[in-house]
Amino acid sequence: MQDAGRPFFLLVLLGLGACVTSGGDDASSAGEPRPFVPLPAEGPEPIGYFLVRFDRSLSAWSEGKLAASNAREESTLEALERDMRQRAVERKGELLAELESGAPANRRIAAAALGFSGDPVVLGAMLTALADPDPELVQKSLLGIGILADKDTPLPMITHLLDNAPEAWTRNNAAFALLEIARAGRRAPELRESAARALTDEEAGVRAQCATILGVVSDESAVALLAPLLYDEANLVALAAAVSLSSIGRAHSRQKGAVARHLVAALDEVRADRRAHVLGALRWLADADHGEDTRPWREWAARLP
Image 1 (cartoon, one colour):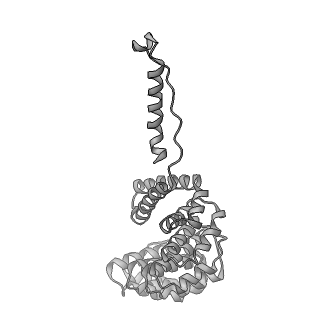
Image 2 (tube, rainbow, N blue to C red):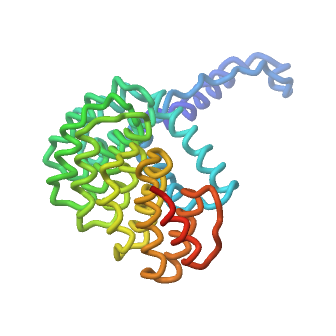
Image 3 (cartoon, rainbow, N blue to C red):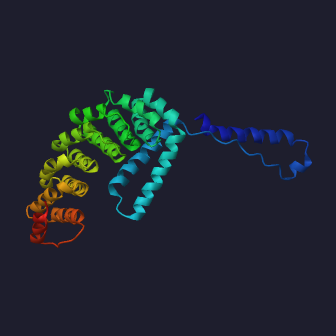
């Protein structure tokens, strides 16, 4: 409230000064212009208000990540991300202080906001927060770690939460963090192993992200694990499995035939909307289009070693 009221207070003082000095000044009394005296610039907004606004941006960013479907929406999302990065960098020190000792709500927002700073220095504080008893803080910290996407992030706490957290959102955000770390270039056995274990998680978002991880790291040993997910009850999971299988087949020629036959076998077993996704994965794997019918695809797959 002091910052908000300061400009008004200065205006009052300036007005009083003008009245005092104008008593014997006929020119001023006559309305001649006085020199312009600029007001001092206002300082940064209080950290509490900053966090409230950042939380709104975070909600808009999350919705945009899920819903962006055309160039205009993607451009809007990129502009929002740039703004959030700039704001997080400018207030990084205060965000760290809030994460370490702020009120619970402030700690949660700060944990996610720090991910946008792009500075690996903040990683230690977010990893420490993963041991906090507040599950919402843990979830926001995992989100921040995923946004930061430092390929050198220590994995044990994240994989432990993916394996053992009772809250679905915690496991979902742990999978997100591992996925973004993998996309940043991390290749580690514990990452692949944790993702493989989570393919049976009851949460579809976890299964889908972990299926994607196995494709990102091109884990050829995961072909047999991913194939059953083509029939998963959730389309999101089946699509992730199909894309990852094709990615592995493209990266490892010795797996191409097995991947092709798994995908072809699913063509006549899945419903029409999912069949289109499987066909798309086959076309990407083959770098060719053998049409809509199953038979030419089966013949092509049978010729592969």
